[in-house]
Length: 402
Image 1 (tube, one colour):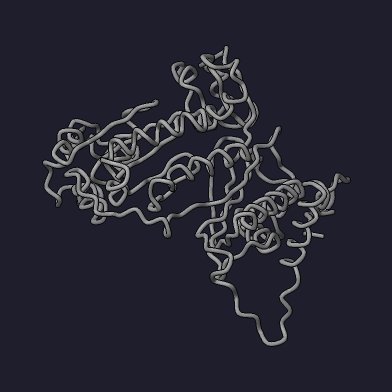
Image 2 (tube, rainbow, N blue to C red):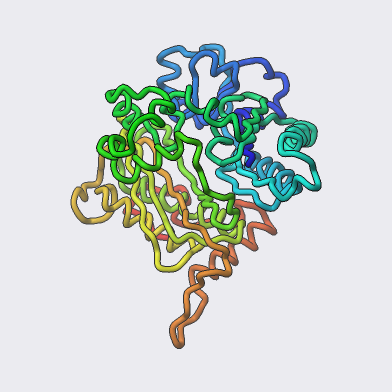
């Protein structure tokens, strides 16, 4: 198994077109009110890390000389497509975890390309030569160990863990290196005196179950012994599509939130149609001014790539939080919102899971409107067609698609 992880991916893509910034601290962030999306290793040396609020990074003066650049997600997606093509030149058993990392099962590729370490080295060489980017690769008998190995050899590294080296590699590592051990579980393990993966391996399963639960206890115990029987399955790999916005100033008006929700829903639907995918699960993310973050999700009966369906579902989810609608908390102003996001998951091919039309029901409607708008944008540009509800106009009631 190989786990390939791109190094500081967003920042590295930006450096390709800003070579004059190489060697300098650089941060990719969605504005001063957003969070750090990526940072060069020069910036990380100052303590800057992904998901750190920019306000905190500035307040702590973590890296006062850093250059901050806005994200270009289209460029990152395009680079990801080319990188995944390199992986699939080696094996079709590729399971992307995100735009910048993937698992590869190269068992069947060894007869053609040589042993797994040579395949990993060739992948690193091609990514560097063809994309001018670096990646770190972990090679191991299982997915779990391969991922830990790639993390431990970053940046621009290659780590090979042979079957007879797995336990010697795993057992000295801290418990937090295990999948499923977050801050809360790590604190629980520490209270039990368990600080390394080897400590977990030496602990009876019953003790782990009492501390962590009947599901987590056996799972972590098996991982601590290097046991991970999962296989790379490119078909079932879960990939989500989403869009979010950090507001320049905190938003308290329902109308403004509704307009942004409509805009984000349209972007997500457009991404789904471009990828020929439909989503069965729609989720929303709300971050308040105090950085408290909540998410809500709903699974639909049928997959969708229709803007109106996504917007309607997202509206219901946000209304459940008291931010929209005429239910509880229906005043004109709401708790200040810093960020709003919409995400589509549980994806299926556009040709799969289509809804059976009722007798006499026409397939045209919002879906057809989306397709017509897509064709107009393809021909005349992204701004050729838009929703009237999103045109600049005096504040009014929350919009619906028009």
